[in-house]
Length: 301
Image 1 (tube, rainbow, N blue to C red):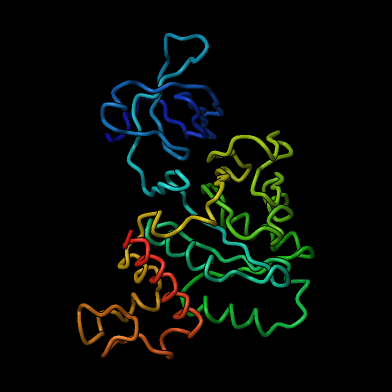
Image 2: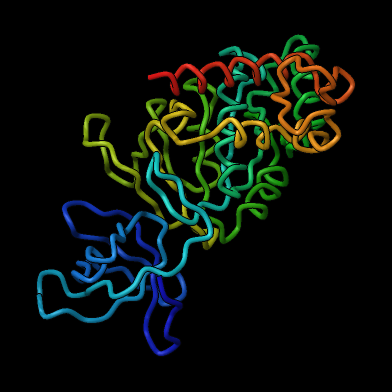
């Protein structure tokens, strides 16, 4: 995919259905419908939400623009099908539902494999009765180098503004379990509503029972909010995550793997493995082994 011609217009691809694509640019205050040139199909380039596209006028009054080029991607996820995602906000609850930490680890591995930043949001912090379990979670992920933020219904506007500043001009996806308060948080951040099914609704005007596809929505922060249906349920093997990707996705393993006695170390109880309880909390290590088993099982079929 070639670099952009400075004399041509560029825009972000918001969504694509049936060969038609909705483009948007904050800078040019532009939004328009486009088709893509046949050369992209010949080059086996599939335009995705999040792509930065070079476009020009078409000869079709109903679809007034044509995508001429897709610029190089800085990140790419085949599932849920999105390009140039900057940040995944993984949301868990400090109360109920009980945090699914294997899901959290899975999302972190997928994101790190594709050079996408991650923030762990512990929401409903004002509903916390016993801080012990949440403190343990914070310890595990802080040791893994994951940024952690706490939010809740009583979070001040200053706290929300801090998060807004962190996601300014970024393409951001929310991920996590249903019932973790993503909808309320999203409304405060973007003035949008998110149903617990994961559907953006309200101002966007899309209902629960519409066809599901990845879509970006322009945000007042100057960036984009990605609606990525099913992202939290994606299986690592289905996402083409290898055993090496998995190990590298755990920062505690990646940092010490070169100190293992054998280069072929699987970090699964191998002789001379440098991964110990001092370098990696037991809960994280157990989940690593479980995800490793899932990938191995998928490889057998």
